[in-house]
Image 1: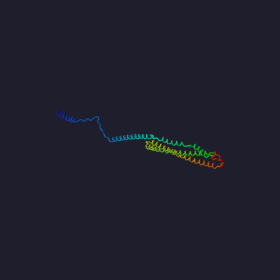
Image 2: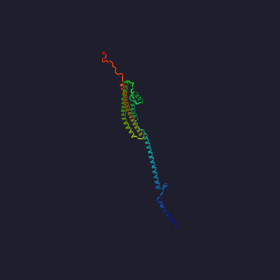
Image 3: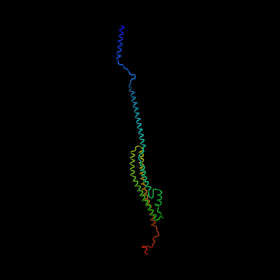
Image 4: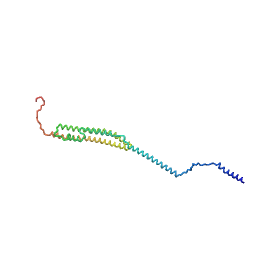
Amino acid sequence: MTIRRSRAALLAATALSLPLAFSPVLVTPASAQWIVYDPTNYAQNVLQAARALEQINNQITSLQNEAQMLINQARNLASLPYSSLQRLQQSIQRTQHLLGEAQNIAFDVQQIDQAFQTTYGNASLSASDQQLIADARTRWQNTVGGLQDAMRVQATVVGNLDTNRTEMSALVGQSQGATGALQATQAGNQILALQAQQLADLTAVVAADGRARALAEAERAAAAEQGREQRRRFLTPGAGYQPGNASMFPGSGN
């Protein structure tokens, strides 16, 4: 009985050991971990990433706006690369030079007062006929000179019209093509300067024409006064007719 029990135990042990010997052995690595998917955590991560991307986009937009602002400031501070000042000054100087060349009586208050006290004043009762004639001729020369001066000024102003037209076209083009506020302002200022130059020319024409008219009217008034003096002298009784000898054929003795 003892031998049979030992043999049975040995067989049972052998039977139990066979599945273990022939079955595959599964070994789990020590570093392996379980991965758990959490939808809530994933959604929060995606939202944070979207917010971070939006902040980056906002920073990029802000930098772009600052760069554009700097560009606009640079444009606004850019000076206009065109100036008509020299040509406008030359036009005014030509007109002013002609006014300074006024003949006989200049555009000067003292000279005008002196001329009206002497040449255009009341005819002197003690002046000789030759002096009256000389004064009348001086007044006529002043009138003719004033008319000539007025026509010269008018011709100069008409000559400036072509320059003004060219400058106006150039300044309007510069104003329309201005890249900033400063250039537009400078172009506008130069257009105003051109208008001021045109007003100066108009003033010169009016002054020269008024001077010529004033000289002509002053000549008429002085001529009327001188005519009255000459008529008075003609009508003033003199010594009368005095008979005397007359010789038609000198040297004949008759």
